[in-house]
Length: 413
Figure 1 (cartoon, helix red, strand yellow):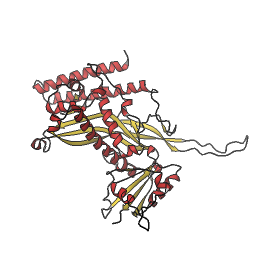
Figure 2 (figure 1 turned 90 degrees about the horizontal axis):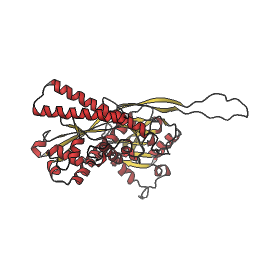
Figure 3 (figure 1 turned 90 degrees about the vertical axis):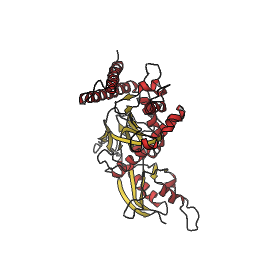
Figure 4 (figure 1 turned 45 degrees about the vertical axis):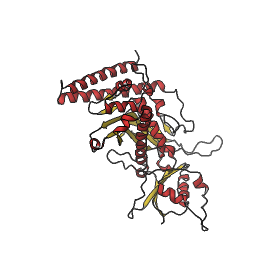
């Protein structure tokens, strides 16, 4: 018997115990702190086994899929990375249920409708696949969660700009990154090299932080909407919120508490520049020049809608639209509301991020948990359903010196 089969059998036994204990708790046959502690231990064991299964499956899949050839070999060592065009779903196992249906064929909309309404008609596979903690929290099947994560990746500005995804097998992951490039020299025939020059590496640590998203829906949505439309609506709502959270964390996260450290607060990025009024393209030109001096080629700029509007309205001295220089044309431009426009003493400043975004890495776990409530806050009074989703992620830069942040940008009235 192979290791994955053994782990799956162990996991199935744990799930049976979880369901039996939950049923006994609901029936009142067991209660108290011991029952709660037993439930927590079983849930932790279930999570551990799922992580082990995914780890073993990755060993099997290693070498099956070739990742983007444009990644420079040796730039980021010992870990497979996903570019924007590659899917998280391709690196997680599509498990089969007892019914023969695969996890990828399940409907998140059906599952949530069943949880909220208690009506699991035509959703028995979803009911069996949703692991519950017994306290209103449900673990979405891995393949289904990966699908939602992929949707969020397509909506995220940092991902559009070229950030790479690092699938995390565990909550902590160490990788090697380039710390120093080797030097080249010319030499005469048969002459000795004057000095050795080695490429140096250093460790970068991903420590998964918990992201949570709070979304409200009308109760009627779950009762009246067709399953396929409900599935799409819920997926999109979670993915859009997740994308915004990823953008903020990767750009402006301060690293305090449970927050990732974003580009703005990463040690080693190029000196931040306080700019002032923006009226032409020069800030982009200066930023690109600084990055080129690091032997890097910036591929993108990210800013908020206020800056986008100011750039779009640039005019020359005759009042005609201002022609952009090549430095600006060569950059891919992306907009996110996660960069504020009310910074500074006057509450009227913003920021622009320029860099080689292929050097931004987002470590992500494939698990996604949700909680649903019809009673939290004003849900009962207004006929709402609150959904709270949890996922684990972190942000790191492979080459901090390939990024520059321009601060203190104001838009003239």
